[in-house]
Amino acid sequence: FGYDKAIPSLNKYKIGESDKWKGATIFWQIDEDLDIRTGKTILYDIETGKRVKKPYPKITWEHVSDRDLNYTPDYNLKQCLFGEHLKRDGAIYKIVEAEKTAVICNIVEKDPNTVWLAVGGIEMVNSERLRPLEGSKLIFFPDKGDKAFKKWSEKLSPLMEEWDIKINRSLE
Image 1 (cartoon, helix red, strand yellow):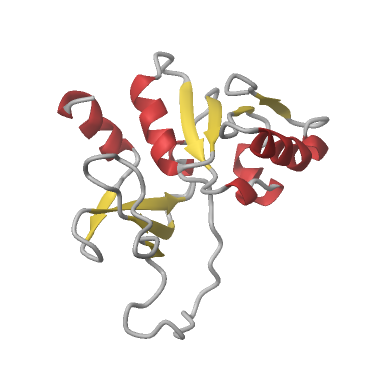
Image 2 (tube, helix red, strand yellow):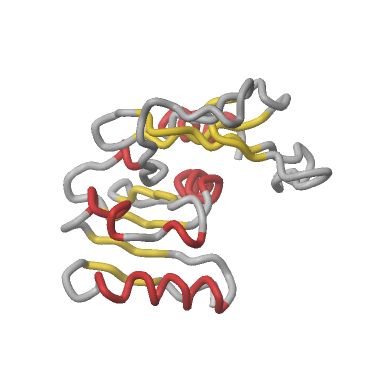
């Protein structure tokens, strides 16, 4: 996309870089009150843009201590949507699975009233995480494949009677 499009999006989503692995990306989960809940650190292959999975998946969390993996922090981790800090009145929220996807969609989005968010994984769709967006228009874009569409349809079905929720089928 080039710097002119990428840098504003990186700044908007407050994306950081970790020294955990050279070039690793931190996707901060910042809530509507601008409190940082955690950060998901992922290493991507610089050539392919895909996550590094060998010799093991290079993914970790910023709330986990490097020195002591048995360390229990003195707080209650409560994750939120990636991009929740961008919440504003009258926005249309388009929600995808992966943080990287939300950032890319933000770059190519033409409608300034649209905010792209990510749940952070196929299993992470739930009413608690969506609660800050209650009363807003939500359009979900599950990953390609019947499994993702079916899973999100089942999870979102109970909310669809009271919330303005649509599930987009374009990848099907």
